[in-house]
Image (cartoon, rainbow, N blue to C red; front, side):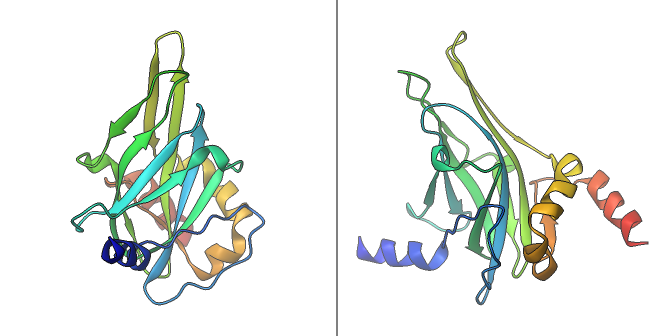
Length: 178
């Protein structure tokens, strides 16, 4: 048990920031992950784990405690997956296993800020169901991200990791660089 706890501590180091946060220097092979949130429900949470690590090593992020639109994590570089999403709906427990879905994977690069995307979790009481999505919202939020995190982005440039290629963002960044 202690061995798993030590490995978990070494693999995943989570730090939450609000938009007024100062830049915390990344150590070694760390990078930031920026998650845009549109979350509702009683106590939604996500579990994030490295893709190539066996065992039950993960970090759980309680989303109900986060009041900001963006959530910033500090993780070691590597491939990760949102392993599980929990969102109880009134008296119904709800959990979805997302570990096998490539859409829920992302990559953290050393000394960069990875844009995870927009995480949408909404309960629909009339249907007794929960809507869970990961959206590529970078085109509409890029300016807001740049305005809210100028210090972080000046030291750790933005990298989009959506689990699939985003030609629109790539073309936009190429045009902007010219």
